[in-house]
Image (tube, rainbow, N blue to C red; front, side, top):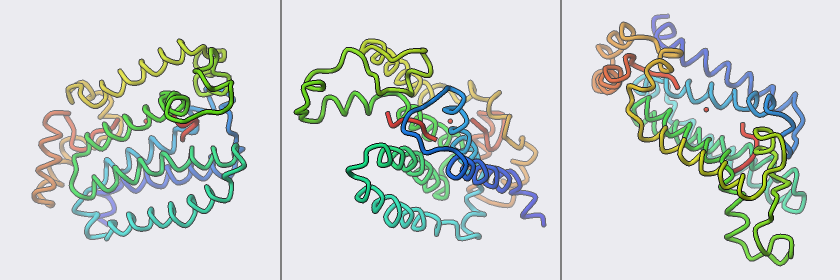
Length: 253
């Protein structure tokens, strides 16, 4: 019972993440287009909750629960679900696109989960996870699609003046972006990514306390978890909390 209480934040956030992911996957249409800003933000909720759950996870407790087995399980989901879907829908672009939209945040969460159970600091879990989802939403992939491929379609031989397909940008600015507006959107996201990765940890303390359990919880866990506890305790000293807190996908890049 003590173990469950000590890990309540992780367990509750995990349950909420799975619940909202189920709503997004089973109750919402699998549209390639982003229909509104509200839909975009709602689809990000499972990702935020999952990121916070991973950040709240105690690496020592993860060892006891053998949560390292989640990593090969994630690989099986990728290899036995997403890979067959990609091959099957290779010629059906909207369905293929939606599967890639789902796969990308899934991979991000797998990366940061692996980092956390290897005793990576909670605040670095958040930094990496939110930085990668910002890159996904930035429009970089759209630009890369136009520049790294040898296009035979004259419409894409040069970068189009208006990016009609970029609905994840449209919902923010209210109209299909010109290429220069898209460049600005990308640049803003890259700046945000750099901020998330390199800004002083103390700047995120107010946000950290939203999900964090406070220094009292951190001290108790530090005493019971040895080196892992001291890792998060030192993080807590800089953030003001042991496990701080700090963003599905709608469009790849």
